[in-house]
Each structure stands twice: as structure tokens, then as C-alpha cells.
Image 1 (cartoon, one colour):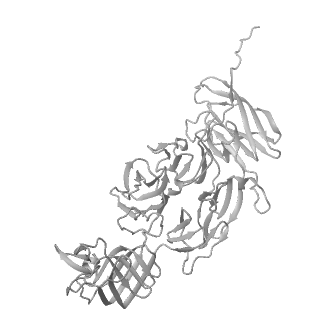
Image 2: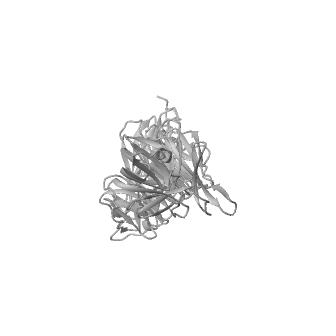
Image 3: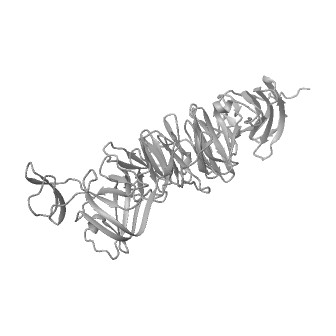
Length: 592
């Protein structure tokens, strides 16, 4: 009897030796992984579990942190620098409820919204804003020369002496003139000054401060007042901004011209204030702080080298600076990049050009900006700037932003918090499923997904990258401090990790029979790994195999053939593992 001859099942063997990164798209290709947990690209092209982290600090009420050679942070209203709690000057306090933005400028650490500065070189501190007020008090105004000496006006009787002064009026404007006996001529005084004398009026200010002086002139007749104090504040009050030319505890000298050598009034009130705008996003660039209010339309810059002065406009190159922005939308972040302050909105980027003469300017580029709530995602890694945009993740090289977030698929993320180390961009984001920490390796241009840790902020020294998690614990994740294990700061337990493939077999229309896996892995002693398979998007992961740590070895995994249209595999592990190669064998059946 003759029997029909059946064709042997044609087996397809696929060997994967390059394990790429995270790709949460339906088109996820072989070698990429649709989902991951605690995976790293440190050992690319191998698939590997991430390094263990180390807890290094537990906070009581974490309020902000600042990177640097020595780290500074605020915890429960107290400032710490290099691990030491700092005693601030009398009257200087940090609020224990608000989150802090801490920016460095030379030796200064400036803390917003408290508007407090701390000098790391001598441990001094102070308020950016200073005010002086007095009511129903006698105030004396005196015309003085550039050295602060009182001057006497010539009374017009007899011949003037050398150096005598007089006030002339020309074209409705008052002019101070000084007499020269050598030339027998009166010459205009280019810059005039007057002194305001009152007990303690200058005590809390310094030479060069830009201050607002506001005076209540109710019931006082002084026609010259509206030419000196040019702003009408209403209710009899007038004000102007001045730069303090000289000072002592009981007087300040500013630019201006009186109509007499001396005037004394009993004023209802007088206010002198060194003020600072309510800045939310701020960066340091070329020895200035540049900042914006989130809902404002103005850009602010402090005086050159002086973070306490934001309203000093003396007409010189070192002045404070501000500009009004006409475009719509709130500001979402600030960062200093390639020698220029960058200010972001969700749909634009403003680049400020700094001028040595003080004639700063800005240009706005319509592009993908920083997502609202993701200002902390701005991180420079090597020479490129990375940030979370409203729709993806972008990288900026000084020209136009480019997208690098296709791998996140259709998942919508927000509230990005970033950190940078070596060739990696760390980015924690929030979605409907909670927090997720991703790492972008700029060497291979791929993403890896770690765990669901929620992060307040990243910071780093020259040696170590840290982040502060929502459990108020600071963890070292990269660098020198990470490497050592101690009783006080132990490494975390070996991590659980997993990698889930995309769909396999979509490109082949016929049915398949999966028959065999072979995995080559390196596993430390005590590590474990498990293999699962899902058939035809059933949602059920079927356990196939597991193994314990045995060094480097190839494991052949038999699989009971099961007819399917497509399948996925998932590898889970515990402890340090590296997958070197994966071989799959499956046969093709009919199309039914």
C-alpha cells in the first residue's frame, strides 16, 4: 500500500543579537521592546537590567535642590549647603510650605519665590527686596555735588566766586550751572544730585541700588515735586525710580535737581524700596539672572553681577533690563544654552541676544516649546538641549527643535522632570497609568524604560547624579557616590526587570507553529529569569520556562507547538542579567 508523502514543516529560524530600546508602537520591530521595566542600554547591544540605586538622604519636607560642586537644598524651611544647615542672617527666613527654585550665580545661591540670596563663599545671606517706610516725619531734601557735599546757590548779589552755583530756567526746564573764575563763564552741570535725609533711610541699602521712592505729598505745596517724582500713584502720592549714588545710614543721594538748595517737609509718608518681580522661571547667563513671570508678558534681567537689583536704570551697560513680549501664551520654562538665555512657551522659543553695551534684544521662533508643567525637563546633555514638548520629547541644537519621542506611541505624557549624566537623558513623566522613568542614550539614539518612580527633581555634582523621589528620599543613580555600598547607605535590593516584545508573525499571512527558543544569557549568582508567551493577542501570558543564575550559558527552551496567527514573548528577571542572543524557531502552516 502506498501512502501520500507529506512535506516536512518548513522551519524559520530567527537569531537576534542586537537588542534595541523601548518602542511602544504597534509597528514595534524585532529587537525592540513594546514595553520594559528596569532595563538599561548601558550594555547595548545586549538586553540588561539596570543598576541598583542607593538611598543617600531622607528629607523631612523636601522643598528644592540645586546642582553644583557642592549641593544645596531646602528642607522644611531650612537651607543646607554641602550637607550643613545654614544659619541665615537675622530677619531672613524661608517659607516652609512653598517649593523653591534655586539658581546659582557665581558664589550666590538665589532662592525664589522667597527672594533670598545666600553667598557660599562667606555664608552671608540677605533679602533681594529691601524696604524703608516712615510716616508723619520730617524729611530734608538738599542739593549736593557729585561728592555728596551740600551746595549753596549764589544769591545774585555781587560777583560770583569760583565754584558758585545757580539755577537757571531755559525753555521751561531748570538747569544747574557752576561758575568758573578762570573763564568768567557759567557752565551747565551735566549730572545733578540731591540728598534725602531721614534717620535710617539708607541703612538697608547699598551704593548702586535701584530703588523706587514714593512720597505722599497730601497737603504739601511743592511744584517741583512732579518733575522729580514723575509717576502719579493717586491719593496725593508720587514716585520715581532712582539709582543710589551714595548713601549712609541716615541719607541717600540720587540724581535730580531741586528748585532750592534745601527743602524740608513733614511728609504723611515716604517709601523707599528695592523691589524684585515675582519670577517663576529663571536662569543665569553671563553673570546675570534672566527670568519671567509665568502669566506675565515681560522679560526681566538683574543688574550685571548683582542678583539683588532688578530696577536699576542709570543709563549704563551694567543696568538691569526688561522687555515686553507681544505674543500670546504663558511662559513655561527658562534655560541658559550656548551663551544665550532661552525662554519658552508651549508653541515658541525666545532667544535673548546679550549685548556688552546693555542693548539686549530677543527674537521669538514659533516652534515646539516646553510643555506647561515640564520646565524641569530642560536638560543639556553634551552639547544638546533636551526637553518635554506638548506632544513629544524634543532636542534643540541652536537651530530648530527635533522630535525624539516617536517611541512613546499614543501614550500622552506630561509633567516632565529631567536629569543628565554622561551620555544619558533621564526623563520622568506622568500619564493616565502613573509615573514612568525613561532614559535616552544619546550614543545609540534609543530609549530604555526603568520603573514607575515619581520624581521631584534631579541634581548632580561633578561625580554623581541624584534624584529626589516622591517618598522624600534622595537616590544616587550614576557616578562615584553610587558605586559604594555601606551600612548607612546600602544599595537597593536586586531589581525585578522585564522586556516585552512586539508582535511576531504579522508579516507572514499563514498560521505559525512556535517550536523552540534558545536564549544565551549572563546571570549573576542568585539571579532568575522567566519566559512567557502570548498567542494571538489573547491577553493571557502563558508560562514557559525559568532558570536561576549560572554565569554565561545558552539555554534551549522547548515550546509545545501551538497554531497561531502571531505571538509575543515576555522575559522577566530578578537580579543582574544580560541577554546576549535569542533564537526563535517557528514553522508556517496554512492560511486557515
